[in-house]
Image (cartoon, one colour):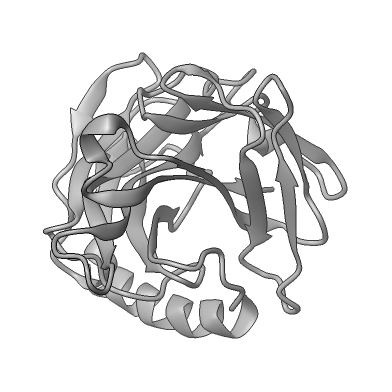
Length: 260
């Protein structure tokens, strides 16, 4: 655990120096991983049973990879999905950025996921109990353990707004275009704004586009290996039952992965 804490202290300094681009105008949640491609290994003393491990920790705020601390009052679900499709709830760590160690015993694609509890934000002056928006947020991190064939991340995890990778990001190379599909309530979400950013961008270089009529888009993988984040945002008028509570609905979904 001491090693993990030292890692975060060093990582925060490095991360803010290398990538300080804003990914949103209001607080956003995403998941980071210390290793997106861990290998299964064993050691007579330290790992008598073969396993791989990583630590998943929360990004929260305006700047990738971390900017602020996520309070328990905001956190909803937090889980890991195994290669066999099984789902396990996770208990967030109590240290910085709620870092949570995950041990994995099988090769394959693992998905860490989380949600933010829906809530209202931004009181409107002169109107009691009326807000600028009602928000809901969802995040996933894609983790390839050992040798992985095909795309094990193509199935939705059930988020209301969700980014589905149409290829395994482990196969990406610099200059490629990463195909994704965005779903809203399980259906393709057309004309949804997409933003992609590398952790190691020295110049705030990022990529923005919109989904087509099939809810699909392609992210230009620009000049950087290592961790990336993709964010999808959707706004819509409130339904009848919320018209006296807010001006609009705001949904956000994030996806993090690594380019080898």
